[in-house]
Image (tube, rainbow, N blue to C red; front, top):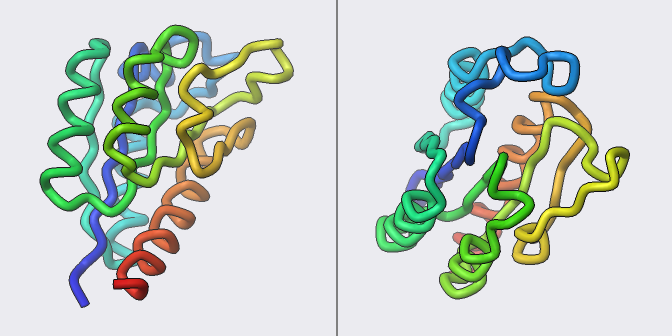
Length: 150
């Protein structure tokens, strides 16, 4: 059985994690979160690619490339794309890549809505940066289920 491949995309503004509104998003920096996720991948035996962009087109290009590269599951915090990233959602639906959306805070508590979430298998929010680890666990399970089905 081949090693599962998971891609994590951090969308607009996520490069400022730990600096931008720490009262809402916490003090964990983007680099610290990346290290947490790499450690998770090493402990659980899967290939992890990390990508951050503030540009919607680059996000879409990376998703298409992921499908061509055989990525098993996409985990994404769309960040600033959350509210207007309908083209990202169209890309995900069109490629049919299994997608899990993750958010650090609970958007519903602020009355917000993600225009991308309807393309997701599931959404994890409100658990801080630990939500990423839950999303990675779910992505790994999805990858194993897909491999077993083929």
